[in-house]
Image (cartoon, rainbow, N blue to C red; front, side, top):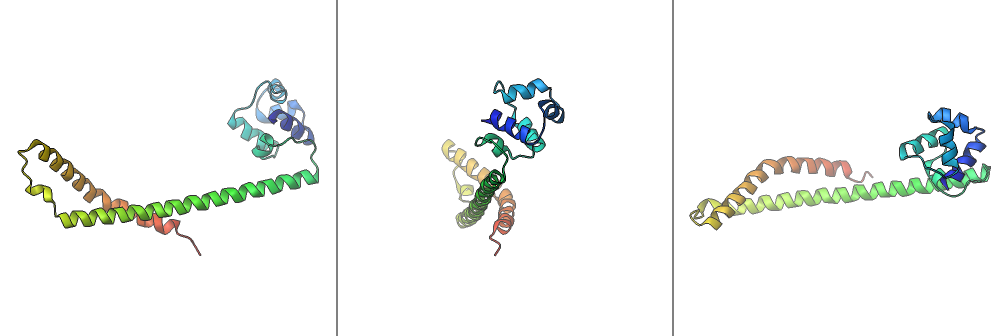
Length: 169
């Protein structure tokens, strides 16, 4: 599919294999191999081909391109419009998910903070002669110590993130 589309688009642009090769900084034989389906360009080269041929990568990889008629260009434009709408919808969905995830992070931080304030560091009154209690007490203390230092930074970051990802009406 790529080889046929590349060849048809190259010819419709009035380029020879040699001229395309010069624009892509490759040898003519490379273009010939691509157009005969003996090899395929890597992703970076595919982007370069797309730019040189002034054709979207999706068109290069998509349906067969036979002729460059006005109707074909209209169809391609409609497909690109659909792709752009899908990408915009995906971006909106990601933004909403991130927004609610940040709200959840804030809620979790507030809940843990309330629990730590309510508990008032209960591990300080534990009997550390018991090895299990010592391990749990040290782990709880380490969690609380880390939480108290990191939670405000994460909370502020999440609030800023919620502000930046809100729906702008």
